[in-house]
Image 1 (spheres, helix red, strand yellow):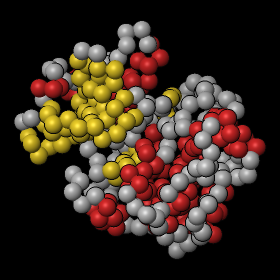
Image 2 (cartoon, rainbow, N blue to C red; image 1 turned 90 degrees about the vertical axis):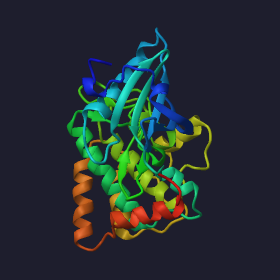
Image 3 (cartoon, rainbow, N blue to C red; image 1 turned 60 degrees about the vertical axis):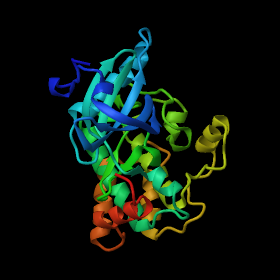
Length: 298
């Protein structure tokens, strides 16, 4: 931990003496996430991921250290930031900025999906984060609504880097969440960072439909078969604009060599917004929606 984090972000005391009022708010790839308040400042609330550390589980250690390095050393407005970390007893405590909700939480607490303009806003911000992450030699591998956090002022941040991996190695492991996986991930063929573009496209559908395209399938075997041999992913409950349909067609190209990267997709979105073909909500409008759905959130 000392090798991957700046000294200023390492907490050497028992976190329970520093943070109080712990209450579970969710879970990530590497552990449970709780909300807590700093004892010295009862107005400062944070999110804490607690990861159980087993002495012999070296692969798990690698995933956790990678997540620490990404959140603790990379800085971008669209990536969730690490404030502090503490290894105490059998647990690693990762103290992060507290956001109001995830996009999944927002959808769960409403009766309709996001408007196309809101979904494009979130997609655009996520792509900004992905362009930066990819430029720093990492892919995320688990883009979905559950891992996109929203602030009360409309900030959008990618979170949960537990499955992130460097780009300078051969990646062929079937890792991620089944319904959001690109075909080459399912097939366990070597893949590149544009698997995040496929997952982002599935997430765009999820935001507008409230569910991903294969929501009706439960078993991974059926899901994998549909991704590899079924019809192209599409909306089940929403009629998108022609601009969104065109965008998704490129992002969901089953041939990874033809599928664009995050920077290319982001550029396309910005062009279509400037031409008036795509509507994109303002940050303030997204913030207003978050506060409407979660009026008492921090």
